[in-house]
Figure 1 (tube, rainbow, N blue to C red):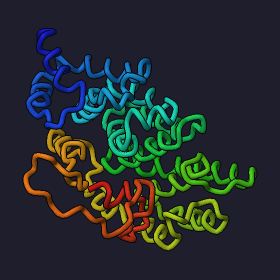
Figure 2: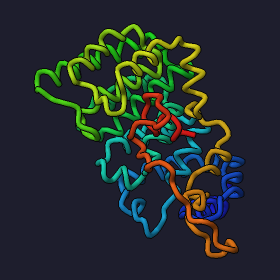
Figure 3: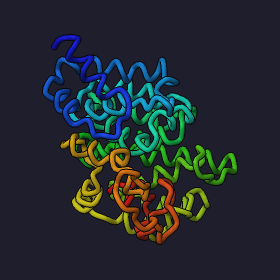
Figure 4: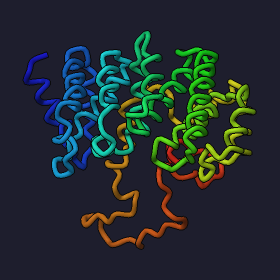
Amino acid sequence: MSNTAWQDIEGALRHYDDAFPQAALEQALAQYDAIAPHLVAELEACMTAPDMRCDDESGWMLHLYAMHLLAAKRDERGFAPLLGMAHLPGETLENLLGDHLTEGMPRAMAATCPQGGDAQLMTLAEDRSAYLWSRSAALRALALRALEGDLPRAELLAWLDEAGTREAERMVDDKLQPVPDTDTDYLSELVITLEEIGGNELAAKVAEWFDDGLIDDNFSKPEDAAARLARDWATCRADELAYGWGYPTDILAEIGRWACFHPDEDGDEDEDAGPPQQPFQREEPKVGRNDPCPCGSGKKYKKCCGAA
């Protein structure tokens, strides 16, 4: 592929445009082998020059397309820069990735994970110097790899047992209570991961953590956690993967559903859309991505109805 061809693709994907860039993405997939090094380089640049990619005025999007294209191809070259990005400061990551931090990034890390990469995800998950939602993304990636059959469930369960025990002991020793969006909420995130793989073997230990006040029961109730932990493996796989949390497959369709390409669905008026419509009225309060899902599942909104 000529440099001109890549420049055309890059030019169409670099910044946000109201129109879904289907032609450029189709071209990128058709010439993937040739453009893959450029996609990896874009993720690497997120670590060295994140500020220009966080600028709302520029609407930089190339790194998001790169992450999802590499994930769709299960390209292991994407794993190292994704892991490096996960160690950026929290504010930078929020500006750089937005909701992709808790949605697209876990799937991308899981899909690009090479042999031996699971241990690196476990290290990230336990790294208290990393941003909480990076650690949560690592947990989610591990769960996904187990659900997809690339990480033995027993191996993940054993590690979650050890990691959870260490964290619970730390919280008790330091007299810590779970505070949302801080590292004291990590054990709550770990319990969600246990629920995702039906970790009923640790149900008694999880109940003890609830009794000791170590789990944030504002979004996860003991009875809901117990019910989800009790699911068999087949049910876990069916339930979790049904919400679109599996490895990316039809990446064009997925990107095409991004909210940025459907602004009017949030009630924004389009000045050229004809006669004015009735103002959008939300029947329930707006639910944050880390809030309890209003459907009553016991999961966080971002991992339940918000994933749809």
